[in-house]
Image (cartoon, rainbow, N blue to C red):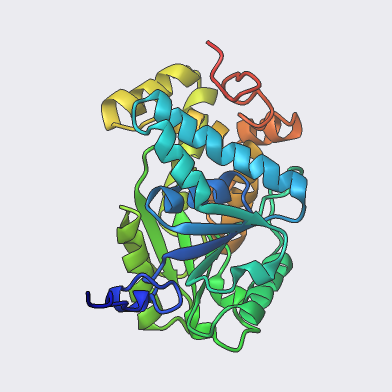
Length: 318
């Protein structure tokens, strides 16, 4: 009887050591709050391994809960099974160490806004970019989820500025599947092409946007919100009816006031002030209604009261 033929497993492409990873099979997210958890969930849903960074274990636990909550909503709407949820969660890893981003093709900075000021400090975000450059391969992409901050400024002190880029996920609009991609002054065409591919992999459309404060989406939304507040102040229609016109008449998912509550009034006031400082146009000056809500700390979903009232889970109270 002849001896059995023994062949190395590597020949069949089963060895992890010799298997070539595909682009974006592993990505990172710095900050897994409201924005970061949406990005992490979206990537994991589309088969990517995700490493997210938080400053402490408590925030890591909260981030896992936030991601699970998003998946549970899909299960409730028959868009996901429990076994699929388990597989998705297995692809997500929380960490407190930048070293765990080693091997990532793409890392997105999405640190939290300050609850009191509605700001994300530029200096803090620049430090994130510097920390990432120390641990990532030179061809890995470093991105920021930006809307008003200029990515060229964030990348100014890096050695490989050509791999830095801005992306903007419209996380406050349910079902939104469009990504604004923002080239910095030194961003290479290769980097843009790769991020365009990432958008397609997560089933998003994308638009190329010039580096500018507010991009397209934020400028359009905030001017619409200011005008809606003016209509409200004039007594022409109620909050509910203004949103109804936008939802039924224009196909908006939530309407301008519900979207504002989701974003947070404190963030909106800060964004408007930034745009007003940048462009000097009166249309970006925050409405008196928004300023009054900001001073009263009626920020929206996060505080339970904004243009609408919400329960502890963020559900609308009717």
